[in-house]
Image (cartoon, rainbow, N blue to C red; front, side, top):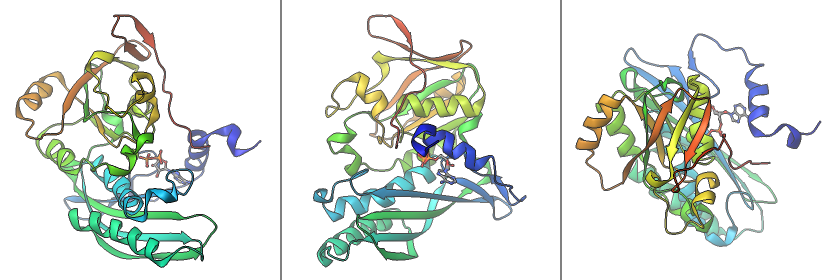
Length: 300
Ligand code: ADP
Ligand code: MG
């Protein structure tokens, strides 16, 4: 059997089934970041993401944007936990033939994101490789009371989405802003039951919430899901991935206050509801309801 036959998610499950964790670990594999014991009133968050040339970006997109993306994807994961980022280490695989200017631009992009979100760049590793590979590991912190996991969705919760989805392959995956201020606002002011950032695709990532929360299913409405102008169409937008928007659930009561007090330009949409029926359902514009099961971008 090859890795390709297993797929990304089953491979991760296989890994996580074989690790033993100490009591320092509050949440290990299975959320946007690991949650670790830290201070009396705070947890440490720890996440890592790798970008590989040809898979996640093309060299011709330019070092600056790729550098920005490499740190932004990690910030997005810390945001999805309700936390704030602190310090990062950057591991770089670079071909020896790569121009120095390109590496400078890559780091200019990383520094721009670090400055914006007050992240310290504190180390890393550099190796020679055929393709450009950037792996960033990011530490963050979150007040214990503000931690949001994927696993807290409850039946009857309403499902929300920030921004619009789709069009990541048309360049939106390089230019996005992690929804850190929105996530912090949510975590600090509302009882957010569950949250994830959209990297695998809206359907797949909502599927992750449902599965980790052990709720039966959800219904979402095509009419309520904003699709970016860059997206090919609705169907591709919900499975494409790399939108880095937030999907979260709150109770119906909480939702009312939230809608009234949302202070950002970033759009906030109520897209559906966690429900009794088993599976993920999409109500099309025609009114027809279809089971859409968690489908998404597979990395193999
Ligand atoms: P995200 O899209 O939010 O970055 P992923 O889908 O990459 O999350 O990963 C899901 C979970 O699996 C995370 O908790 C991540 O830390 C964990 N994970 C991914 N790859 C590995 C691996 N090779 N070994 C251990 N844990 C992993
Ligand atoms: Mg994530």
